[in-house]
Image 1 (cartoon, rainbow over the protein chains, first blue to last red):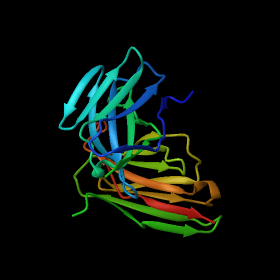
Image 2 (tube, chains in turn red, purple; image 1 turned 90 degrees about the horizontal axis):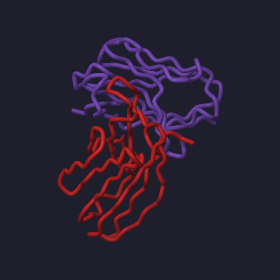
Image 3 (cartoon, rainbow over the protein chains, first blue to last red; image 1 turned 120 degrees about the horizontal axis):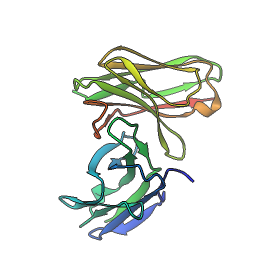
Image 4 (cartoon, rainbow over the protein chains, first blue to last red; image 1 turned 135 degrees about the horizontal axis):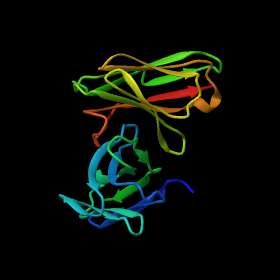
Length: 111
Length: 113
């Protein structure tokens, strides 16, 4: 079992819909959870990060962590065509540790 | 005023050749990284340097040798290239080794024929 599992998609949704992206993980030692966005032919860029369990909101984006289920989510409200990209979840055990990335989910927002 | 730049952007070469990829960051960051993203889009760390000191060295064939001449530069030299080395190689930097935000370069798409 890989440490971080993420459905590669693609996931296609109509503009304006709420998008839910998810990852599961096996290592209960992970404490820092991140979401990176990667546009085609570009490098990833950090969207949000959270520490331990709970929710974090930033504009149209909400990140949720459920450590008891080893499950993290990213919600995108009022999705826009410009949100079309690959979304990679990422996590690390502590601040000195390497970051482990999921494979990414390709998201298409249809106008 | 690109933050993290890599050269070349594309690299096509024959098996057995030796090649280098260069990376520079102008963000004043202390920590730099090399990642490999394979055809299945799996992004995996290879090396990390903090203040020119190697701090992460994953299970990578010793044909891959990183070199950090100063804090702003991290190069990757690959000897005896193999077909399986074909991938996109990303350089990244962060303010420190404990920072969650890493800034990625545009990637170098390496194709080994």
